[in-house]
Amino acid sequence: MGVPGTVGIIANPASGRDIRRLVAGATTVSDHDKVTMLRRLLQGLSVAGVERLLVMPDQHGLARQALDTLAGEGHPVPPVEWLGMTCDGSAGDSTRAGALLREAQAGCVLILGGDGTARAVARSAGETPLLPLSTGTNNVLPSFTEATVAGLAAGAVARRQVCLQRTALRHKWLEVLTPGRLPDLALVDLALLRGRFAGSKAVWEAEELRELVVTRADPATIGLSAIAGVLRPVAPEDSFGLAVTLDATSPRRVLAPFGPGLPLVVGIAAVREIRVGETVRLMAQVPSMVALDGEREFGIAEGQVVEVRLRSDGPWIVDSSHVLREMVRLGLLERPWPSRGG
Image (cartoon, rainbow, N blue to C red):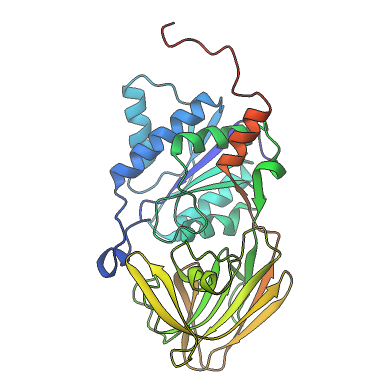
């Protein structure tokens, strides 16, 4: 799968900067933080023997700053090619980059961002293995793996040194069908919210939530899926998801870590398991917004129906810890490495 030794890098400069820095306790992830993270990624990729890097030319020049700094310090880096695209700062940048990396047959793609960035890449990346790293707010899918380790792992996957089926998960996803719109997807959650006011794309108020469908649910995460996780945890590898109906007047009430610094109590009217291949039909009782992976995406009219189908053939999501353990098992880290002194 992919051209051996080729790794793509997509760094979202807008991740970690949404409204939740104002209304909640979310931490801002600065450009400096992302540049230093990219430096460590590049050093891991270099040691891993990656032969070719394909990099999205983000608007803030994050990758270029990291590369220039490493070059100035004399650190070796793999040959770099910039993707032939112009970035405008929208989520479409990540989607276009994902398509170009798929066409170039990258062996693995490193993504710096949150759930929304991972979703944007997955919309176009096809079968390309993805390794999302957290620099956003909703970080159910991206991991908090140290970048050096992630670089080593991505290199091993791209060079086909490890078996993809042993080191990555074929992630579930939600196929979203709405009359008058092209099919869309969510990797973690879909929410139906009362009201057509978009405002900030980020969902940070639970009062307007009416319906929630999730592919995975963990009460120890942050975001919409945490509400479902409080009701019933669902692992990424489970062959089912959950559909939840919320109602502020319901006597069943749960406490969920809805956002950084936002533990909220919500009313639950119903919860049920949905199996892979099953379709959930959500009808808007009033004009509503549909949020995908924690971000408002489009509005629907009263009486309009959104069909949501749980599928198991989503993107390959690489697990860095599984890769490193597999490398140890195969003896790939035991070589006649040069000593530090010579």
